[in-house]
Amino acid sequence: MTLDIELFHDVFNASLIGIAVETLEGQPLFVNPAFCSMLGFSEEELRCKHCVDFSPPEDAQKDWALFQQLKAGSIDHYQLEKRYFRRDGSLVWGSLSISLLKSSPSPLILAMVEDITDKKKAEEALYRHAAVIESSGDAIASGTLDGIIVSWNRGAQKIYGYTEAEAIGKPISMLVPPQLPDEENKILETVKSGDRIKQFETVRVTKTGRRISVSLTISPIKDSTGRTVGISGIARDITERKLAETALANVSRKLIEAQEQERTRIARELHDDIGQRLALLAVELEQLHQDPPKLPEVRSRMGELQKRTSEIATDIQTLSHELHSAKLEYLGIMAAMRSFCQEFGEQTNVKIDFQTHDLPSPVPPDTALCFFRVLQEAVHNSAKHSGVRHFEVRFWGTSDEIHLTVADSGAGFDREAAMKSTGLGLTNMQERLRLVGGALSIESQPQRGTTIRARVPYHFK
Image (cartoon, rainbow, N blue to C red; front, side, top):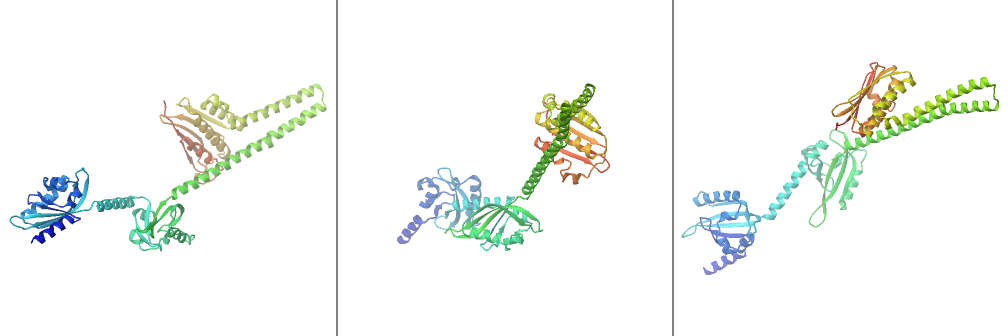
């Protein structure tokens, strides 16, 4: 008997699992070193505490309710996972097993507690990781080294169209376009060697056959020995970004083309018109110098040459104004616009009805220049394409925006076709407005006229 007691005492003290023997009131009588180590209390301190003193109220309440059933005899054991307060106030997790010992003279309670704190932390980390994976808008998947899919999140279903059931067990190569037959093999070989592929931009195919642009990050999955046993990948749908980049490249190309067209026009006007007129004027002056006629004829010819010189100067001034308006800089946007409409009307024999009201003062310089260039482009377009000789220009402000409209009742055009070309300079107007936070809209139908509307946000001060 003595030997049995000694053996029990040795096992009790050597056990790595915390053990406590309690009364039916939950008062500890004996606690082993593992239990003391787990909670950070000495054996004497634990004997002075009640079992409910070790846990947060909600955990202690569940434990005590089961304890009461055990005490009443309705159950003889129970198990649960609960939290315990350590002496320093920190919390640890324990797997508690309670059994009723029907000993005499009175029954006792055997409590065995295994520290599962590390396990709980790992589970919580796993749950957080799983929640991130499931809530991610990116496609997150894993696979074998042979390229067979073994996990598939909601983001992958959203991007590629395959459900989890449809994807798992299938080769990842089903997402690779036929035009890239060796790409997936190269990716697998790279990851097998232990290397990571980061933000690799390529093309993939959805369940419906639609091609999408994706950015891939592929990493090796390694076991505890460092051996690569699988692959994990994140794919981000960058189709919209790629389309935007392409659109921006097209806009840049169109703007360069428009600039080159404008330079060509100016060069042609300088060379074919103004240059030739100046050359002819120089020839006639030379002739007048070498063979001077009689005085009355000199006066007549000098008057004619003076008139032509004045016309050339006017045309050069007009060309200069189109390139840079001094009036815009010194007199403001309203005066510059009014002057432009008047001069353009006189030069091209058209009537421009210009009206303005409620403008802020001053209009910001970048906004003013934008509206002036849009007006120039729109009026030139109307004069060139509308087939009518009367236009309306309205320039006004509201509480939060500045507006410009240029309207005619002429031939009109197909808006969609015009937006795809550079002939009407619409791209140029759009980009100018975009740079100041504005927008361009066009109302036009064949034979029903055209109205170009430009607006830029503004707040009166």
